[in-house]
Image (cartoon, rainbow, N blue to C red; front, side, top):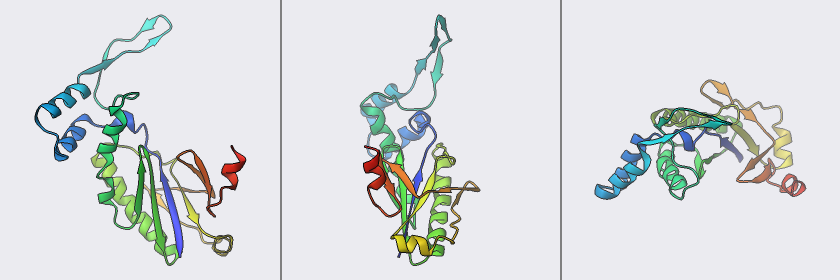
Length: 193
């Protein structure tokens, strides 16, 4: 059995949440009437300006994003991506705020490659529909297995793509602040404490 994880990196995830899409999703989740109106007023018609030394920019309307540093910001983002798993058929998503990992298992490297690439295409379409962007340069994948399995397949080059760009394969990754290697050992994490 072969296992693989894809670590998805979204570009400015909290800053790019589309207000109209979020409000439609909130309504689908059963938030209606005055509660929805209140949340709409919280999200929309916000302005911002920047100050650098003594210069202040003109005020600009914020058209997307959820307020960060608030209790509602992360909750809004979670509700925004809550339907992402529905677009995936062959991988299992692990969602924690803006950290998204897709895991897959298969009887061969080719099975893994096929499953992951299929769902990465589904993810790409979901991201477009929800006006979110993938940071392909920071998205990576890792083959997981024993020393023997990894060595036996070291010549097998996995071709994992999204947006017609190859995703970088790594032998260790950091997820939720923890460093994990392809053998699922804690050695690298322990060395960095």
